[in-house]
Structures are given as C-alpha cells and as structure tokens.
Length: 239
Image (cartoon, rainbow, N blue to C red; front, side):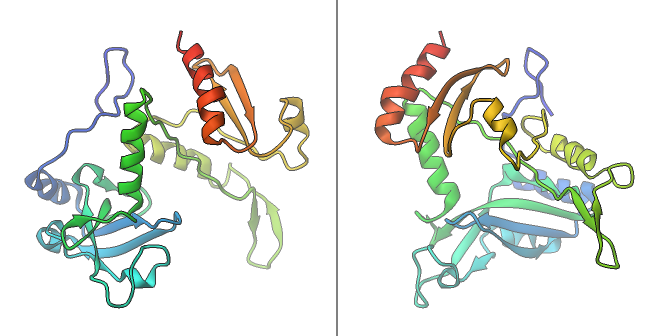
C-alpha cells in the first residue's frame, strides 16, 4: 500500500487497466469473482462470476432484476440493472481462497441509475466537497461474545481458542484504506455511556485527532443544526 510523506498509508488508489486486472487474477489464483453492490436500503447484493468470464463481466454481463429489489425504482417491465465493476475496488477476499470481489456501479441501458447507492454516495461526496468538507468512513466489525456448543449450551467467546478479532483486524489492514485502530465494547446497562456524558440517542460527536471530544450535538441532525451548530464547530476545530 502506498504511503505518504508522513509514512502513513495512502488512501489514493490508481485505477487499474483491464490488462492489470487480468494479470492480477492469474497472479492471485482467482477462480471466482463476486459482483457486489448494495441496494438503497443498505442490503448487500451479489452475483458470482467465473474468473474465465472476466471480459464479459467488464463489459456488463452481471444483470440483476430490479423489480425483485424493493426501492430500486423498477417494475417487472424494466430493463435489467447492470453491475459495472469498479476496477479500483478489486479485492482478494481474506476468508476464502481463489475468490475476489468488485464493488459495482448500477447502470440501466448504459446510464448511471439514480437509485444506485454508490451513485447516490458519489453525489453526496461531491456536495460535501463543494462545501469544503471531506468524507471519511470506517469499518465497524461486530461479532457475538458468546459461542454455542454442539449440545446447544452457550459459553463466553474464548479468543485463545479462535482469535477472531485478530483475524478481522489483520484482514481489514490488508484492505486499502485506513487500518484498524480501536475496538468498541457494548455498554448494555448504559453506565459507561452516562459516565462519558451521553444522555440520549441520537447524538453526534466532533472528535479531534487526539481523541478529544470537541463538540457534542444531541438529537437528529437537521439542516439547521448542521448549518448553525455543527458547521461552526467544525470550522472552529480547523483553526
């Protein structure tokens, strides 16, 4: 992964060519590809594609019936949703040998589909950029802290038997982008949250690079709240 002048991992990725992808499939021993996209409700959708069909896939062979997915703005008469792979998203999945995934942009008849979550996100990022902001996201991997035995009984999760957290951390660090930096525990009785001053849901916190909470906004973030409270707080934090 490229690093910037400060020695940190860079999140900038060069868009590979078709030949680069084909060479990567051979080098990585890939047999199957996952054409993955997320619908407007946040539900992952996927179709398996043999690696031998990479040229057809890059040309738009991964079709989906939009009418079968609620909220995609299609009916039984509509033309198929086509998953067009983002070549820069090529990732060898860490949990299975010989499989790689591509995040796909949804198009219909060769045009970007407005109900595609990636298209909607891209528009939102452009709007943020025009306002002087940069969008940053993080992965929150969750798992159960208990394990069910074959006899049906439940016992606490034992990381000495299966270091699931370590595996997820290392897998996440292999994915281009920011590395895993911290773990989050669940505060079931709310005691820890109260100690930190959390009084209601939802709440939005502006956190500095050193982890200091710079500003707390209680309640849903409305346009007025963003403009009159959060935006000035962000501007002040940048000084």
